[in-house]
Length: 207
Image (cartoon, rainbow, N blue to C red; front, side):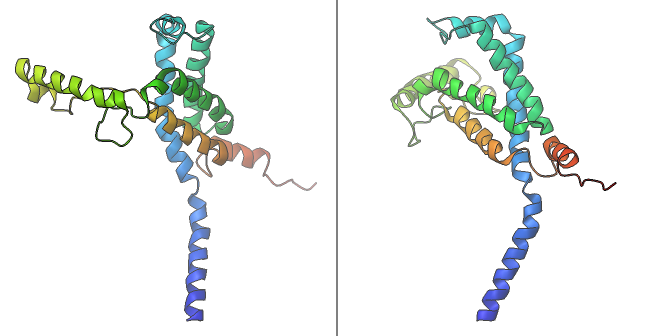
């Protein structure tokens, strides 16, 4: 019994040793997932700069942020450059910090009043009163579309839903970026790994 337990433990440790060579896979998947999201968000802000500035600065129907032009440039630039950096695995730890800040600002200034859920789903245990109330609006919307529209065509690519715009996505992105802050871009699969290997880990040649 003891011998069997020892062999099982050795096999487990041996498997973990080989598995460690693939520990760059998780940060790579995070980076591939996050990069297009950040690129799109940054591009949208900068390509529609004046509209974004207006939305950032308007206190009545926008975010009411100070220095809206500067905030737009910083947010859009951070997301665009950060998306490129994530794609390449370059300076991942450095870029994860400002990207996390943009996610925090988005969560607190835009999404926080709406609760957690991004899509209004009254069946979720995370549903707040706003989500529950939205079900009546959704039911009426579906009734109108079924009566006056081609409902089968309208829903052929997915069900009609109400966007709740909660913090769900921003919080998820923040957690993924926080993980990248600790792991970096990943072994073998990031520019950071190869730069560090070439400049820092390279053996010193003897004269």
